[in-house]
Length: 364
Ligand code: FNR
Image (cartoon, rainbow, N blue to C red; front, top):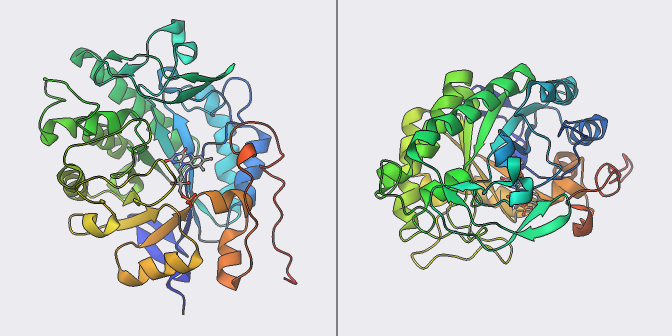
């Protein structure tokens, strides 16, 4: 029998199968950066009995935006729209956690309140583009956070976690991956600080661990997860010793007893280069993290099954195939063909390429 379709537990999250919907930014919010009926429809379509959905990355602060059109969780007025989403997912027998997001330096002054510089651990600019209301613009030069400002940023994560609770989510995932703010603190290519948040890994990990602790204070450890991408280079990321850096992070998160560790595997897309000291995959982190591990990145049904068989991960998250196959768990279970995805409709727009991908016919 296929391991993908056996139950598993991630902390207090009791799941009926191991095909997880990965967090996917789709930029279809309503005015006020609220989740509206279209977003509700999209998540409803992707709900399965016993399945886990991780929401698209959701900014906890206006300063946390790098993508115009992402639905936020930085204001109470944004709770109601998300509540409709969680009600729909629960109505279909699914579980949904919110991914909490702050892009840090991966932003543009046009997206920042008052047109100010984006924040970062250090004033080092990333290569690439932010999604402004007027289209893609190169990331702006960030300013280094003063140490006295850091508690307020941590509090934004705490508030976001509390609003996610008010919106009926089942937990939260800290977005510690893909070169966003917590990742910028973790890796030494982007963190040149000389205070308690920079230098040795014990200091560079402090920010991620403190926001995780804030999420735990709101949710309890069994409903807080963390996503990391130890081998990702997206957002001009680099670290001189990724095995040590992320091994340390996994150890500390294990000690905190979080619900799950979500690892982007080192093998997808042109932006995922394997670092010189070797890839850091779920396999490596398994030695340090004893709770549930979700792996993501370039999987199909067969490779997901093979990974679960090795025991290096407990579940597999699918991104792009979930975009184009709303009933992905069912298709994998029945071994049905998958609909290809259309990249041109990934970010922004309306229903096309969002809620108009078909389900498999029962006769397929
Ligand atoms: C992503 N990914 C992503 N990751 C994340 O942590 N938060 C996010 O909001 C997003 N948004 C996002 C949007 C789109 C359009 C894509 C294609 C990807 C990364 C995603 O969760 C996943 O790790 C990758 O897509 C790799 O998995 P697949 O697509 O190969 O299954």
